[in-house]
Image 1 (tube, one colour):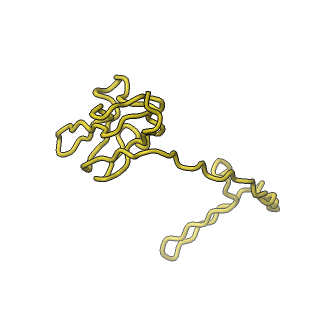
Image 2 (cartoon, one colour):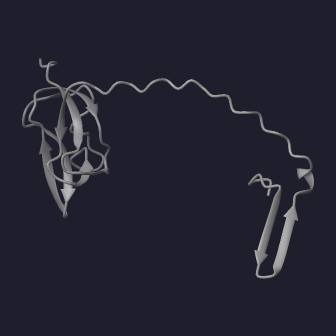
Image 3 (cartoon, rainbow, N blue to C red):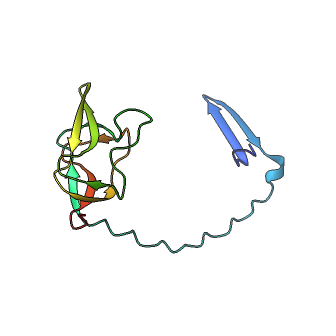
Length: 129
């Protein structure tokens, strides 16, 4: 009961009743009131052009388990570069970007279930080299 921080437990089955109380529960001590903490405002979403998935399925960020991911934040991509794989109906479909620039956000993680039209990465097309 201490481990679960219980001071009293009552079980009723039909007309039978069993009550158990911790002997050291005694007088309950009041917990201090929670002091609200300042929550920082959410970071603004990255600006750029989203690259979306054309189909629903499971997203994979690398060509095989343990391999380097196709893209990371800071990766320079060109139109046609692969950014991930989407497994749909036991078929792995390579997803490529239509944009050239720098990846400023990766919005999905390996193994995430994604929807058709969901944004996968954000590309800053003004950061072209």
